[in-house]
Structure formats: structure tokens, C-alpha cells
Image (cartoon, rainbow, N blue to C red; front, side, top):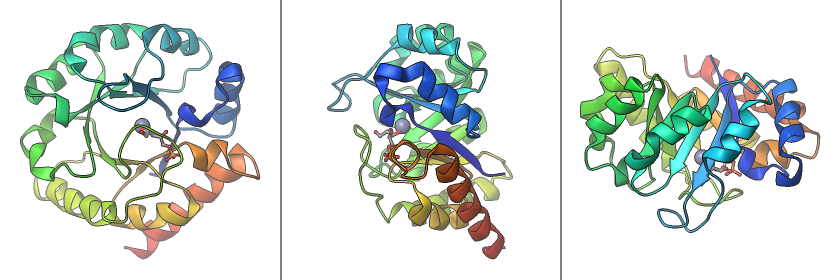
Length: 225
Ligand code: DX5
Ligand code: ZN
């Protein structure tokens, strides 16, 4: 019911394969892979060749978060590299319906991603096409930023919108998620939690980090009824 997706952005890139093995052994449900192009976001990470290389390390699904301009041009490359989920930012998709449909045609799970300022109505008419909605709880581009508190209400509104439509689309949150922030977004209806520094930077190790977050999220879900 609660899924944790460690973001490898906060891992030690000089030991990427070992880091991935370690979070998988520690119980990662998905592996969150942050692709940045230095244009859509002011930071640059990696692309298809690196994803293809790390695909050999684990069978855990890859949740590829494309923080790039013009994602349509590269969908096939990321599909071939081994993505399972492909997330596109609605801010750079003028033909969002077409983009999400194309991801599904490539045999991958389409994810619509919303920046903190982007209204929920931008995805209202594509909810039936997507496997997950990602609500950014920081402005994308960097790990280790502070959770934006208004994300909680946004998740709650999105949850209500999805329920009204009788759909069952999971809500994912990304940015500043750790033991002290996960509970409120879980109570609001999020079920998939990306965490970079909250996992890789935890003083007691990856398993302790994920167990603690999972437990905290479940507690809040139970109490929210
Ligand atoms: C931010 C990325 C996140 C990032 C989260 O642009 O999309 O996935 O890795 O890192 P933390 O959990 O440290 O905020
Ligand atoms: Zn991300």
C-alpha cells in the first residue's frame, strides 16, 4: 500500500551499482531515476546510456523522472534503456494526451508530473491515461531541498479529484520526503514516496530510513481512516 522509491540522485555516483544493490536489499519498491537536462531544470545528471547500464543491476522497476525539455523527442530512448515508468512534466508537454499515449504504446507506464505551481486542472482530462501522478513537493532540480507545505493540500485535492472520477491512480510525491514530512502527505492520500537524501543521507542506514518512513506513512494512513 505504501511504496518507497529511493532517488539515486543522492547516491554516491562513483559506486552507483553498489548503491542500487544496497537500497534494493534494504526494501526499495521502485528505483527513482532523475534525468535532468540543464534547461528545464538548472542541473544536469544522466541519460539513457547510464540507465541502460544500471538496468543490469536489478529487476526492481525503474521510475524515470524526466526533467527535460521536449521529452517527446526522447521517449523511445528511455523506453529502450529500460524505464518501467516514464514521468513527463506537464509544463513541457503542449500535447500531453499524445505524449502519455505514446508512452503507453511503447509498453511503459505513463506518469504525469506537476511542478509546485502547476494546477491540478492541467491533468484533469488525462487522468484515465496515466499510471501515476507525481506531485512535486519541491521545485525540481536538486536533492536535499525543503518540503513545500502547500503540497499537502494539493495532494488531498488531487486525491478527491481521482476518487470523484472513480479512478484508482496512485499519487506520488517527490522532494523533501523523510520521516518528519511523509506522514502528512500519506494522510492526504499519497502512496508512493520518492526520497533521495532521506534514504541515502540517513545516519542509521538505508533500511532504517525506509522502514521508518514506511511505518510513519502507515500510521498516518491508519489514523486518517
Ligand atoms: C528533485 C528530484 C528528486 C530528488 C529528491 O528535482 O526530482 O527526485 O532526488 O531528493 P530529496 O528527497 O533529497 O528531496
Ligand atoms: Zn525526482
